[in-house]
Length: 135
Image 1: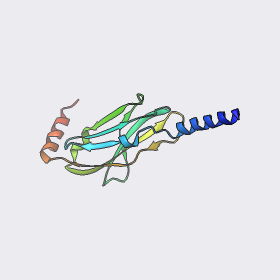
Image 2 (image 1 turned 180 degrees about the vertical axis):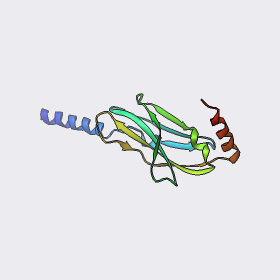
Image 3 (image 1 turned 60 degrees about the vertical axis):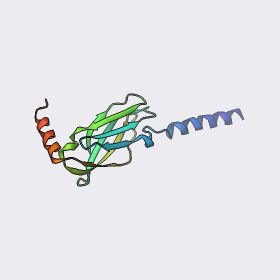
Image 4 (image 1 turned 90 degrees about the horizontal axis):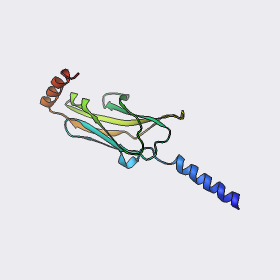
């Protein structure tokens, strides 16, 4: 009976580890303020996480492009501001996060996060002018 109880305890522990979320699905958000798009998420279990790659595409693009890589810092709130979103006046952006692991496991992806982003022509022109003078 004692071996049976120990086996069940080990199986429940392994099941809990296997089913723990790296990113809390309810925390994944993307929003536009008319200038930039902000992506936020909260992590729960970052064991074996090598990095988080933030990927983006538009409705006109077939595949995603990596726009940022974030190193894991332990369970916490992550926030990334996409400052390059001002370049188009009206676009539907799609974001997802690719999670790469240190143990050689296949990467996993979050759900697609669509964000409608409308930027005025004046703001887009001003943003392009500012970008020319950045180092």
